[in-house]
Length: 338
Image (cartoon, rainbow, N blue to C red; front, top):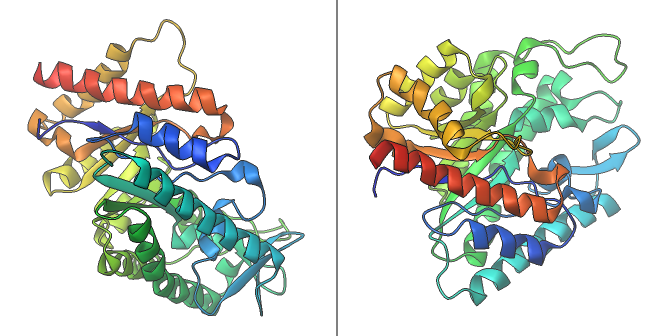
């Protein structure tokens, strides 16, 4: 079915066992769904989103200080832990993929987006790197320079798989609105100009695409989501929590889908009440789709995901959440196409 809705998730996974995580993910999300490289934040420092993404920086180094990850002159023990964890995860991915009789045709990897990376890194003086224009420029350029090697390593681990990259931007709206607090907490950091944000996104998206990524999507929170900014920067689509979307946001997303963009919708609750049926969730997705006049044949632009990160669950419950997400995709397709 060329127009079918498919399933994926947002990247994080509970526990510390990378082998079991990859087996569970790939077991539930076989083709046509989108399996992903697991992130295991329960392992601690170096497996968090900031530390993991900071390992990609070229000619910039970060290490953990009392207030968080700080730009330093040379990599330290925590940076080494982050790099080692990422290498181990890629080795596990290669082993699991190599043992499969028929590997999934696609793979997703998640990185922190440039705005959230700037917000999560600190300078020598203890302030967020976001507050310094020179530091922002250096981080954006260093990040864009580092993604090519990362993509190459992923493609070695999963040869032949079409690669989708999710840039997670949980702080983007607050960065653009000037709502992130300074390190002291007594004031907020000046809002980032929209043009500078687009330039940062564009440089990373272009670098990922040149390195071989087939799709680059940006994951945003619904509140004040800068949908136009990331799409104008060249993103192939956006990932958003569906229940929180406003009518104007749905209308903007409809325009994006009609222009060929992709849409990942967080619609599957982690702990659904017993009375909630899969068919009800499917209807809640199809209802705005039809109200906006979008044809069913364009549902192929949609992937459904859990509504939140799976990291707060047990591995067993996370696996069950993936199964529910696949079941939801099937239910949407059944309702739309019979």
